[in-house]
Image (cartoon, rainbow, N blue to C red; front, side, top):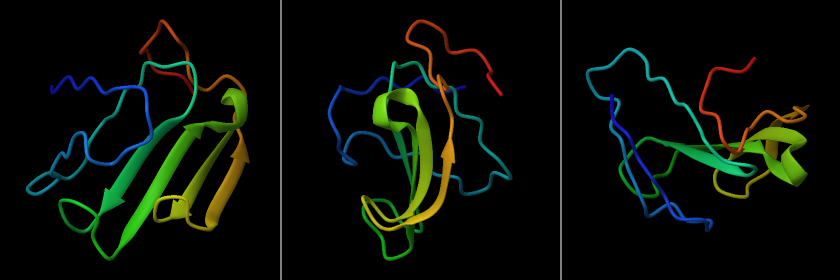
Length: 91
């Protein structure tokens, strides 16, 4: 298991985790709102990217976008999906 801590601002220059030779990854988030995950075909900003944003708009919605701040591919209401003190599994 890899434990990653990031700072509280929007940036995709903080941590890159390769999925090469892995068939899955499990992410657990600890935060009150706005967890952003970038899925990319390369380390850094590649050409094929999707952004998963959890707990946006005051921890009420989540989206999948074409690239950082790109158009929404999927949008769903997810009230309180993130929890400030808890990294447990929530469905």
